[in-house]
Length: 231
Image 1: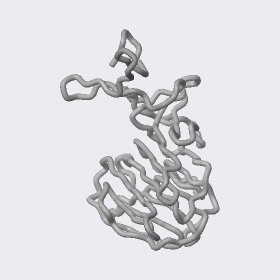
Image 2 (image 1 turned 60 degrees about the vertical axis):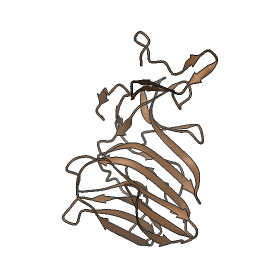
Image 3 (image 1 turned 45 degrees about the vertical axis):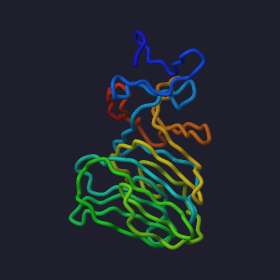
Image 4 (image 1 turned 90 degrees about the vertical axis):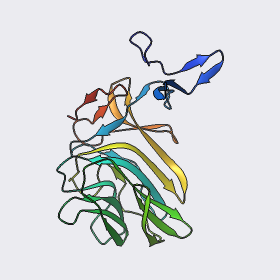
């Protein structure tokens, strides 16, 4: 929805704020969830050198949901997490599209793998604390669980990769939510910071912007479908 060449952030009918506008059954506009100074986009895309340092260390009750799509041809890639070395208390998940074709979760000193079809489409992975255990889901379907373990990762959690390594995948992320003991602590929305046109994610819970902690800049897809490649 545009008024002239401008896309409005808010629309009112009298004093009532409109949440969405439809053309027939198609939604053509939604009110921005972000404060003035930020423009929401559909997703961010990394080339393998961009990532977000989320500024916290995972613990045994940290949960996460990530909606993402790996670049076609990616063999293996961790999309979220923190690790020093394998076998230490770590917290990561992602996938491997090799001959084994699996989703991977690591929690504390344990890990879990579940097979999948190997397509390069859009998928979700989630791990969430509930009643003494960490339940794992892929595309909303329950997979298995880890028994709760008390630990804290040595490194901060990253999105678009993991801490503890320079290797990062090329991946598109549409949204990310972080929880602690089931309570939402971060709700990350892809956006552009208007002041400097910097792509990143805005946290609706804490009112903070997270920009690229690596090199270059993220690519993104604007609300109108315009795509900008990562640099």
